[in-house]
Image 1 (cartoon, rainbow, N blue to C red):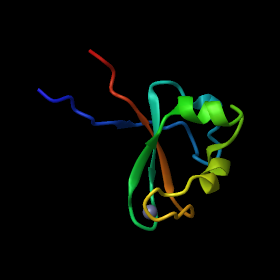
Image 2 (tube, helix red, strand yellow):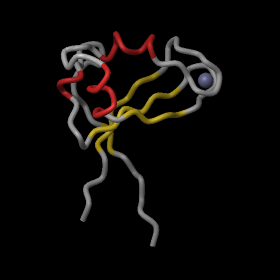
Image 3 (cartoon, helix red, strand yellow):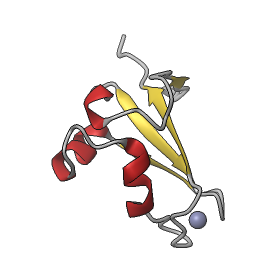
Image 4 (cartoon, rainbow, N blue to C red):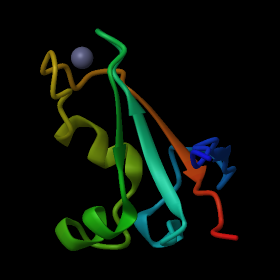
Length: 86
Ligand SMILES: [Zn+2]
């Protein structure tokens, strides 16, 4: 039996106001490239290692480039809740 990776969208309020401190270990930030639609996941642990916890996600967006096409503009960031282990 394969593990299902159906993530649940987490609503932490306006994405323009969400700060790293609001992200928990059970969250994942899924970034969809506006240009080529590649999807990549970034984990809060990774972000918190590199940036201050009061950094707003909206301010991080220009720093993340798509690994396929290099685009960093208008990419869609969404926060999901990881499935709990049974
Ligand atoms: Zn891309």
